[in-house]
Image (cartoon, rainbow, N blue to C red; front, side, top):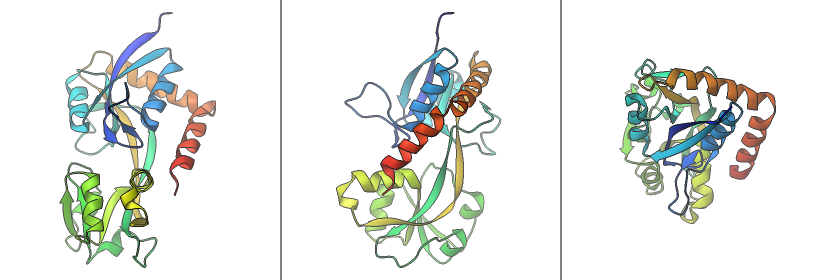
Length: 233
């Protein structure tokens, strides 16, 4: 049987899960590696179209690609796509503070009465966003969010933990400047498969089979463990 080829959109700016460098031909990170490995077990070859996340979702919604990652499932988008039952991965929404903060293992309740930075366009828990006792300030990117924290414009920021560790490890200016001090919770992320693409439903089903296959043979756990070892500070 000939190998089937599909085009999936990958976000370009969420290292270490999915990002694009000018000197690379395709996306790098855990997510494209997992997507490629899962589809390979089903004899499907993946071609990635690397774009900003908002365009990634738009392409999938309109059927220009068969799917997009990394997507959280919300009330707003749950009926727009086909969702494979098993999440691609889970990621903590961490609370980060300046390195001199004398706190640890904060939770959402602890942010009341504090100023907290968030990134425009990202999805946050409804109860956090609607809590009037938490002062929220917005930044256009995670990079600007970190700068806001270091400049003492906010007391805390919300940042996914592994991307936060990645920034601390790869940006010398952040060394000994910020640290994780707690978490809001854990989010699941999926490949959102297109309802407008003729292969969207079938590929979502094939992908689920592939994901289960790499979980069963141990490849998924090996990839995830290596990923965490590389980033843990």
